[in-house]
Length: 145
Image (cartoon, rainbow, N blue to C red; front, side):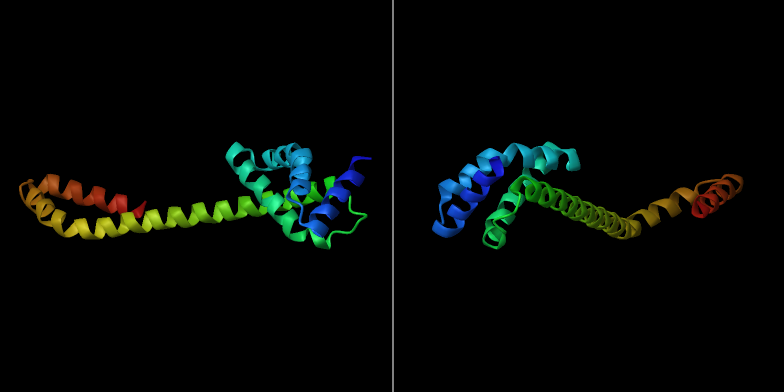
């Protein structure tokens, strides 16, 4: 039963602070964790980040795991939760970045308008009345959209 060996390695890591024992767990289970992360994230780089996070979580929580823990099941569930949290944070970050971009473009428009207004007025004054009304009406339609 491979999980018995996993728990033995985990106990060795906890009891003796054995980096080689932890490396053994990582070596044995990295493909499982990565494949689960990849299925959830759909992205190679994101899956790598999630995989790394899962093993950091394992290192922190190793002492609290029961000797009866089935490590592959624990890793699967932890990977699933870590991937969902990762995707939530990524989505929120992208929304914040989009909002910041939109705000910056609004700020640019506000700073450019004083420079454009005189040029627009000059161009409008050179139009005949019929063309000027046509532009005014099209601007009204545009503002409704």
